[in-house]
Length: 132
Image (cartoon, rainbow, N blue to C red; front, side, top):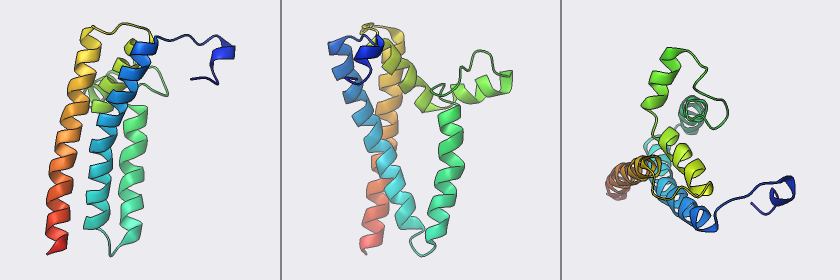
């Protein structure tokens, strides 16, 4: 954020803090899912990278982070609606703009919390099974 200030970037400090908290919650879920995948395919290390790359690039493209989704084909817009990262990205934009109490932020928080809950559930179960 500090690097972008000379280029005219302005943000809401409260929104930035909340945005970082939202990213941390989402990151816990993604990190847990990643660890579960690594444990599940630990004997075939190439499989981890194949799955990661097969999932990560489409999720990034369908999040609207890299390209605008509004001008894309309808199938891409429908697929993006199923991507939790899209809601987190939209919430981050709203938070940094200072729109702290919008529905966009609420949907982003729901997506982050559900991703964290699912990730922790899968991650803890996978870790417990591997310890046996």
